[in-house]
Length: 281
Ligand code: NAP
Image 1 (tube, protein in one colour):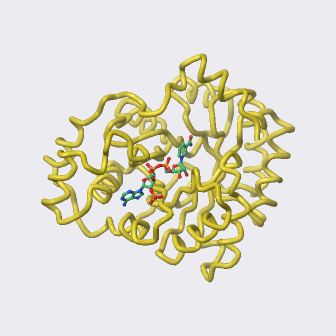
Image 2: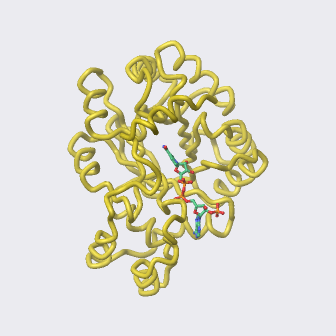
Image 3: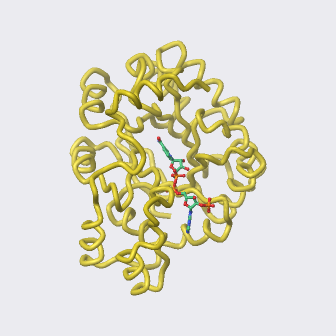
């Protein structure tokens, strides 16, 4: 598995497995077990997904050693703030049945993210988290966090797929040595992505599926990715992306699909900020 070296020297698999919206805990445990069997070594969950316990059970039951699995979870908005973050971290660890975390992310750039970051910096220095980062932070929010703190975020996990390619954000992140990680690599299937004509013709040329072309395109951009599937055959398909290369013209063709817009919502929309802020776990 190709790995990415984070800005603190920690190695992280470039391809992992996400469990957003896998709310049935038995299904989540089964999916993570199957993902580990398939070869995935990066699992991405969040307190807000309410499935950390199922992820933890799958990890405990797996024959893969704990230190060969890279576990990410995320802090929800209501728990931002110094004291609340410390408590939320302990709760996530208990839920996961782990004694350290590989990556802890601030899930959304809202609420007391300053207090949250100070708590996370301490936990990181104490060795309880191997790397700390953020999610859904636009460049200005990330800069604000960076200039006022000592530990630089290692990762920013943001919506990234062929219809929302995040070219400018990626340039900014590269310049500041913050690793970009894609969420929603398939745009959760929106706009019939799996039947997109442009992607289908590239897939046919390489004897691969549209899903594999999308994942390969992200890997060739050095973007980390965490596709989700509850189907074993798709887990295998999504993992089989290291045996072909997209050509320069394929990359250019996919670049033309960018709408530079989210397929979900705008993190700058005040109504959405209010709605997210009112969502408690
Ligand atoms: P996604 O990975 O873009 O898409 C998942 C959808 O694609 C599911 O409906 C899945 O169906 C389907 N699918 C997967 N592989 C396929 C294949 N090979 N062929 C056809 N369909 C396929 O969406 P996502 O779950 O939102 O994003 C991935 C991960 O990113 C999440 O699980 C989560 O860990 C993370 N995430 C983070 C944030 C954030 O705010 N930080 C937000 C969203 C997501 P089946 O499951 O039925 O196979």
